[in-house]
Image (tube, rainbow, N blue to C red):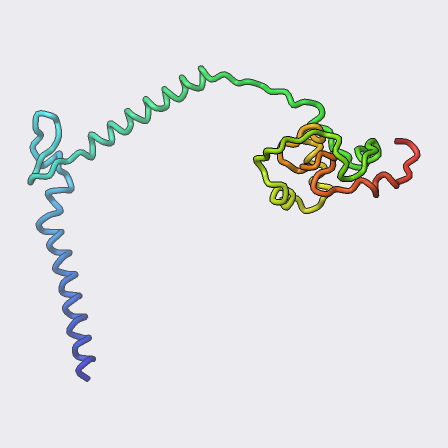
Amino acid sequence: MLLKVLAQLISIYLVTLLIACQTYEQDGNANSTDEPLLNGKKNDTGLSNENGVLDLSLDTLEQQIKDKTKAAEELAAAREKRVIVETERSNHLNQPVNVATFARKTFNKKGERIYSRSPFHVFDHQSECAIFNTEDNAQRFFLGSGGPKIDIKNLDPDGDGFACNWDPTIYRQLAIPND
């Protein structure tokens, strides 16, 4: 019972407080800030200074418009000065990599070193190979990025020309009449 009465008193107090705040804004403070340039006095800089409040809203809006126009002009000038360089893609990058053809053109055994590799590697062999979902995809990437002569990702640390333990044996056993 006591809690119910206390809750009612608090709600009445809050409603009274909200009404008092709204009437204060309507009567006292709102008129001085709604139209400061019409009611206020302008100082020598053209800004309104009423009740110790400096109104910069019109000047900042005008300045924003000027800044926006200036930025648009500078952007247009920069675009006119821009130099566009067309690049050509080399033909070997546009061609798909055929791992079966590569396997049939090689004769070395898996693990037999025929390409020199640096002993210092930026990339870890195991983590780089783990990126690929199949060994065939690793070999395709390896061949497409300059392999087997160049191994930028350390996919072929033993120098046999086969990336990530890729085995060419199955492709060498294929019988294809015209290759």
